[in-house]
Image 1 (cartoon, rainbow, N blue to C red):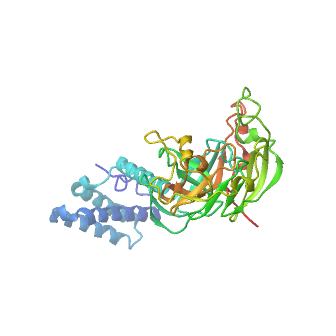
Image 2: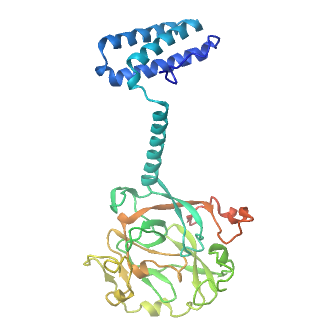
Image 3: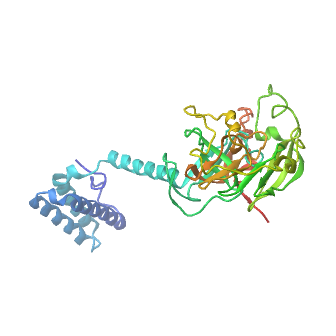
Amino acid sequence: MSHPVLGPILGPVVRLGKAKKRAKLAIRECEDILARHGARIDPAAKGEVDAALEAVKVTLLGRDVLAIYDALKALDAAGNRHLGKYKKSSWREVFESVGVAVLIALALRTFVVEAFTIPSGSMIPTLAVGDFLFVNKLSYGVRIPFADKMVTQWDSPGQGDVIVFVFPCDTSVDYIKRVVALPGQSIDIARDGVVTVDGQVMGELPVGAMADYRDFEPRPDSAAESPVSPGGEIYKFDARLGEQRFQTLHKADALGAASWSEFVAGRATQSWESRNRKQYCSDGTGAFTEAAFLDIRLPWKVPEGHVFVMGDNRDNSLDSRFWGFVPMGNIKGKAMFIWLSWDSSKAWSRPWEKIRWHRLGQAVHRTSD
């Protein structure tokens, strides 16, 4: 049986460089087999292979192409007689190469970078439905998959970071939101969506009406004209949080419902430190329950080892306001950039229009000046 490397010689008229290259490959393969299996090979057989190896090495010192191939033939014959059962077949080499590639890809996805798709409009206008982005899973440390625990942590999320995390109420689902408050900080949110952290209002400056909402969350033509139910015009606001600049959305009918000062006046901050659970998840269902709000209300002090997150689309986001805090161990990583943006509402007859070309390569984070 002939091996691909030690296989049949195709002819003597071959360049010297090619002959030496084949000889070196044959030597490397035989030496590798002897190193791994030499103890199990009969000494006499091993001696024959060693002699053939030395003969090939000697021919490499000269420039006689025919001598190199004669020595290779002898090594091939000795190898087939005594090392054949230790040689890898070409199919085995392919499977091993593919297996190694798959393991490397899985390791990279598990510990380094993971792709994430935006399924809902909770982060509009920062992210659109159909955005595909990469998540840096080493931003804050190394996390044990499926265990919701950090092996080692070298950094913590900052205010304004957009993170992907395992939803505390259903560990089969990943969410993406913006970190608004950190451990130890007190947070309150007025009925008009204005956020205060440690008594400081998160400044938001009005930009104007959101006229292109459908470009971020495509809907069938038969859908209601208003992108959010109940109806009402949506307004954009420029916001800053920590080192991050971004935009938020608010519905017109929510603006001015109550000023933040009226809403938070006289309300004592409540801590969750004495509680075993830091979420409003219903037992056994994986869902959240609004009735739990009767037990504890804003303003809250964020417990150690947790963060408070919100969507930039303030009136269309299921976030910490409803189900509580995100444990650090649930955080999978920090969003990086958009590598593809797919508009599902566009016709397949013009497939190039389904890609939002202007969004490709956009960074998720914008640093404040």
